[in-house]
Amino acid sequence: MYGVKIEAFAKQDQLLELVNEFFRPDQYEVLPEETDWGEATSSGRYEKVFCFNQAGTADKYTIGREIYRTLAPETGVYPEWGVLTGVRPVKLAGELIHRLGSAAAAQEYLKDSYLLADKKARLLTEIYERQTASLGAPAADSVALYIGIPFCPTRCLYCSFASNQVPPAEIADYLQALLVEIRETGALMRASGLRPESLYIGGGTPTTLTAGQLARLLGQAAESFDLSGLAEYCVEAGRPDTIDREKLHVIRDAGVGRISINPQTRHAATLERIGRKHSPEEIERAFQDALAVGFSSINCDLIAGLPEETPADFRDSLSWAENLGADNITVHALAVKRASRLREIDPVFHYKQAANVKAMIDHAAEELPAQGFFPYYLYRQKHMAGSCENVGYARPGQEGVYNVRIMDEHQTIIALGAGGISKVYYPEENRLERVANVTNYRQYIDRLEEMIERKRKGIFHVD
Image (tube, rainbow, N blue to C red; front, side):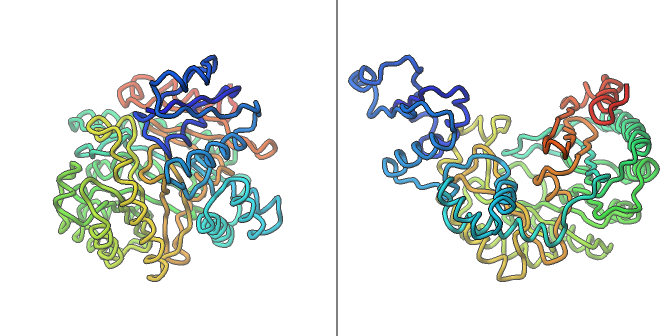
């Protein structure tokens, strides 16, 4: 057991995220600031005691560099993301490029000030420049729309999202409330002169809805929002066991150009292990049907680090995904969140998978560009195996608009449905304000008027 003490810094959780990249939480204790370092060292309780920020700086990254430079040689762990623990490092890279005048200068700053490995610094600036070239800045009167369907046929082992398994009557009740929020939000947007650049229907699994329910949902969206200028219209069809030709035709006929089918792995044993009730053959059939129906873009998600999978298993899944017909492949490093069943089973599972996941992520970074897929968006999460990252790869011209905008944070996101978190962008101050819906779908139904009122006041400033 190690002792860790951080002096004179109030928001210690921000720094303990970095400490967790070197030690598992069960390997160290955080010592209160009043603890005498000498007494703790001589107590015999700890193998070693580390005391950081004895100089008393208020700069998080100065303390972070001290933590990194102390614990890396101690543990033999050298995180390639240096002292960065935030979700949106591409946004930081963009800000540095604008401030310093070039990608090369930004890369040097990332390596010197944040201790990033050279390849991660290059990846960030490459992604930012690709986003800028392919999408540019959003129009001032544009927003991104998100509509959430918080239902799935089963709950995956690693899932921490709003994902409920409920009877059909409950889904019908939810949909009825959601249609009201869509209608009311559409009226507020038109009155405010706002138009959607992208519309993303996610979950959960939206294709848990029946074909008739999907038609009602998409029909209400078309009535309520001006979809004539959409750069992207996407529906997540993540679970192959919820997809059939009828639903795909309903989605495509409504003008949706992009869908996401998310197998996560090719391997039947892993699918069963993580709680998926479909086979690899069903995944292949879903892609064949989607291609036949004529979607202009299909995303495929894979997860690196699923239980009992080896780097060879992941390489096999990646090669298979390249041949399914997707023009986007998003590679996620396994994150073991507090709300997941996997966290309950093994709280330190992601530490055990660190080396495997790093090998998988590195393979994807070499293999996908060789096959014509290039990284276009990236984000990180807490509790990620190997302290890695999630990267979306796309063929040129097929970059996902909504994915880029939500990570860039220079556009208002209006989110509808249970668990939706709207983010209002104020460009003059370059800041966001959150306007959240409740997460529980029953509470959402019961408190629908309150959710709409939150939008009236918090987004549209209507009293």
